[in-house]
Length: 172
Image (cartoon, rainbow, N blue to C red; front, side, top):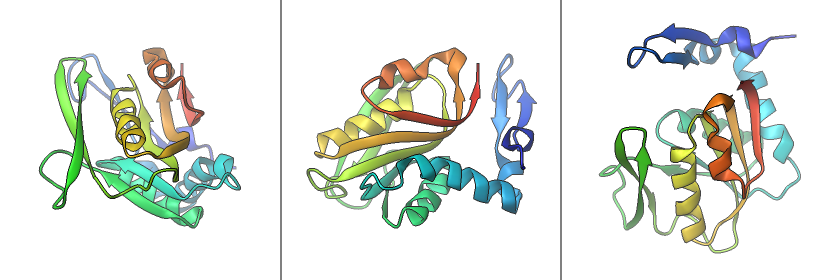
């Protein structure tokens, strides 16, 4: 059996001193590990009527599109400002030091569509919380949240308590 944790590389002091970055690039380069990760993200949501997967720029695109394909549904990107060409909605949210903004096309989700949120990492919950706000503002029904890695010691899941959060790998 492939141990996905062994395909995640720790990079100390990136992007700044004191942070241990969880690098997914070795997992992405490992065909069987990547396939297993996608199945483990998708499987808890099979048979739950997921119509769309939403993923945030940029690594949420990698996993989100693959999960959408595994669930035979569509994919909607959430992007950084200035990247979407059509009418859009945006949300600004707090980061540890400052603020950030994410955008989604205003016509990307129909009211009542069942949506699975997917990302590579859940840390403080700010990015995923902002993505959920965008989906909910368009009338989407969030079926759940699937992340490859959860940094549980940062308690990001507390911001997402209204959602079913599934983590493939959890660091306590």
